[in-house]
Image (tube, rainbow, N blue to C red; front, side, top):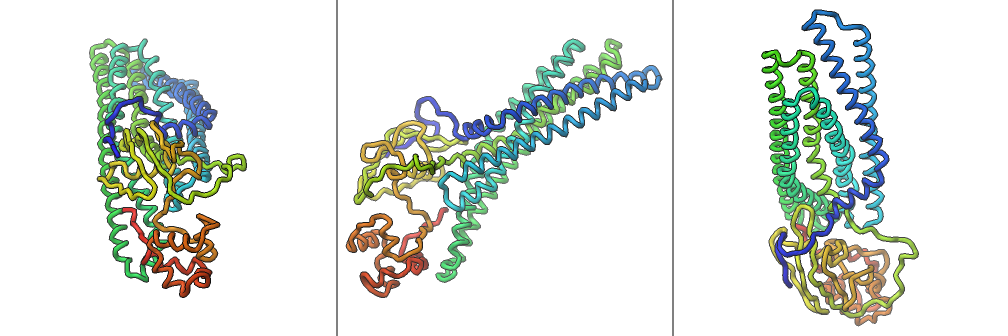
Amino acid sequence: MTTNTPGAGEGTPSPDPAKALLQRVGRELRPLLWALAGVQALAGGLLIALAWLLAGALNDVVIHGQQPEGQTLAWVAGLGLTRALALGAGAWLAGQLGARAGLALRRRLVGTALPAGEAAFLVVEGVEAVEPFFARYWPASVQAVLLPFAVLAVVVPLDGISAAVLAVTAPLIPLFMVLIGDRAGRLNVAQWAAMTRLSAYFLDVVRALPVLRAFGAVAAEATRLGQGAQEWRDVTVRVLRVAFLSSLVLEFLATLGIALVAVFIGFRLFWGEMGYERGLFLLLLAPEFYAPLRQLGAHYHARMEALAAAQRLDAPPRDLSPSAAEPSRPPRTQGARIEMQGVRFRHPGGGGVEDLSLVLEPGSLTVVVGPSGAGKSTLLGLLRGRLSPQAGQILVEGRPLEGERDRPMWVPQQPHLFAGSLEDVLRLGGPDASPAALVEALRLAAAEEVVAAKAGGGWPTGWARAASGFRGARSVGWRWRAPF
């Protein structure tokens, strides 16, 4: 088996599955987004008009000592009320974007095959992490395009120096957002991985509490839970550290830009090169020019968190329609040869496998070892069909891996024993299996002695016992592995 570290290897990178998922959901919400853009454009235009009227009214009061005209005050009140209504409509549309995106993602999760712990976590926490992307980041990104360009278009004919300051300092904010966001994105992926593992493991432990208490293993599992919680706590603190640093940088750049505009306007007012009304109008517009960019930076972490959550939410859906049923084939009675050829899969935040090739022969035992992040979980996800290769192929007996029949059997940490006798459960994998084959299956599962002791009899009387009676025995005779 050959593996390369993330970033090694060549080839054209495949589309990011997390971004692709968000784009698919976004296409369903496009009418709402266009409506939101129209409302925000209206609010931006009203803001510029209000700033112009306020600058004129203050100029009359401060410079000329005149009372503002009643018509001017009426215009200010009317425009202010209209803008408030537009902002309220924009907030409602943004909320609808988030709610409908969450509904679309939950519907998608209904048709996916996920472990119970992970599914329960993703339906609640995972979807709620994606909703702010549509409810906050999307509206902020639209406003960051519309309002700064509108303000700049108004400032350019009035004062070239102020326009130059705005045009030079504005690109620095998204530039630093991208630089800091790259680090924040990797940390968010690590945080979500730790949180998902902790959630799934906690559900496993809660389900197994009676067995753990019976065999005195509660303390050991509590220690493992503590280790998982500490891992999540550490990565969360690192995420918060980067978030505070990014906020500091964004506020500094925005404040610097406003201060430069104010200084240049102040000098020219002092030298008599600019009128008070025009200078005040420019000063009122400067903070509004940077406000959408600051909001975009403040909500940029929502984008990073949404991408990390979408990576987990991007589970392949199951087609449950009758037309999707596979043709009936007899079950395999022997192992199959599995081959991976040049398989590549990269996660959005980094990590995965690159140019992975291996051969798993029937009856062989393969142990996957490596440090955290080496790609062990990615390899198992590819073999299970949980992940689809971005390059290369997976072959089962020389044919591409496709359909539920071809996927390797996956034994989870807590195997479920269905209702019925032990014989009924064993025959799920081979209805026509002989008693000798059933005994051999138990031997291969290291459960032969435990079942013999619990059954209280041989074939067939002891095997007619309900399978639920063996659930407590599997912690002794069956191999059990903790997720950490």
